[in-house]
Length: 267
Length: 267
Image (cartoon, rainbow over all chains, first blue to last red; front, side, top):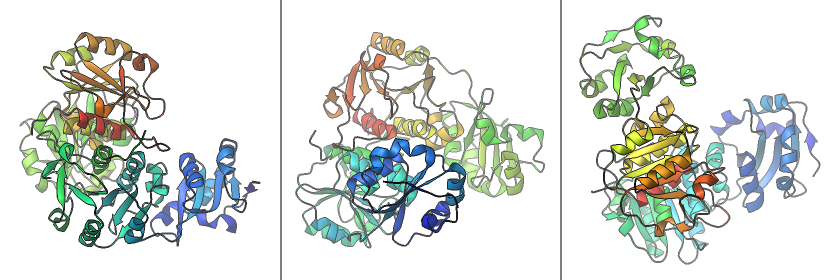
């Protein structure tokens, strides 16, 4: 691995990194941006996604050797000084570690479910549009051995730069798929033998009393509106008991409790 | 309650609101800033802290009547247009709801523990310097009926504006105290009959198997370094089991799981 020095912010070879924040908003034609050492570590070790190139600050290079050694031979590693890197990215990159990944062909929900075996644990997100929450939920999904995350189209893209960063790379590790219609998904999961719990403050079961053998799907909705009525009326609902007068829980915190409750872990 | 209109950003009556972000960093001589409708709701309803004044955007006034009605007669409510408010605060205030609270005399740890009775649940934070995490932990503490939060001096001030906001007001509701020396605190809690668990990835007990009758203290440390050895060697340690290869959990998520496990709730 021989780093390629970039002196000119307009260099065509680093055009994928130009104005990173602006581009977050418009998508990237099949690519995503991975940012930071921990995320690069996951990206290079899980190998779920192709890597197009890496761009790092010159003074970070030495500390990344063990990660960069894992890259396929044909992946270029670009190196730049702080000023050049900031001008490429369009803001001050104090982390100074970036990579462009290829999204590739993402499976649809049915295709992803076909790959799961035995007592799978799946998180289903409906309307979770905040990247911090989606990133945190992926982090919890990875920590508690969830096999997949399914997201409706109104949820945030897990490969959005900030979602990947908050997930500390879990969004590059836990398989996910996007689905169109929540009730249709619930019917499909039921047909495949999944037990399904919709988390809701007014759920019929206390989650501590919920039992499940075999595959399980946990549905998480927004903090405000919650899950759609079409889901709440279709599957069992479970609540996380809270103190009267302050029944407010962040959805990522709710996911931590629920995924831990049904964690698929063999220590 | 008759709102007082502010036309001049330099008006002395709103000087406490000037350059809010800058002042976050230097402290405020016995005051704190509460921001947003939910937080103002908690501030005015719990009455744990005195309120010096309220400053709101003119178009938010109507929606706040039921909250502002709770204010003592002598608390002025200032109203400003968007441009004036932004010039006072020093940045664009799209929420447009601010209040200045008085910290008052905060109890020390011993004083706060003296007020607790029976099977109290207490969270102990060591080195949690990130406001998002401190805010989230307070939110979880309130949701699961914790009676107090004790923070060491290296942890973030719970009355920092962003911590209050992330806590959705819980930092104004759950009593807290700051302590100097973690081992000395552990000895004090032991002398008061508290069961104590230090959360650690290498804890001896799986938290699902941890049992406790009577008062309980749960210790949370940083994600990086964790709790100091002087704590880990002094009290029982408990782990949240995680998947091999991704044993990474945000400290706020860990607090959600642990506080839920020992929640003091009577539904």
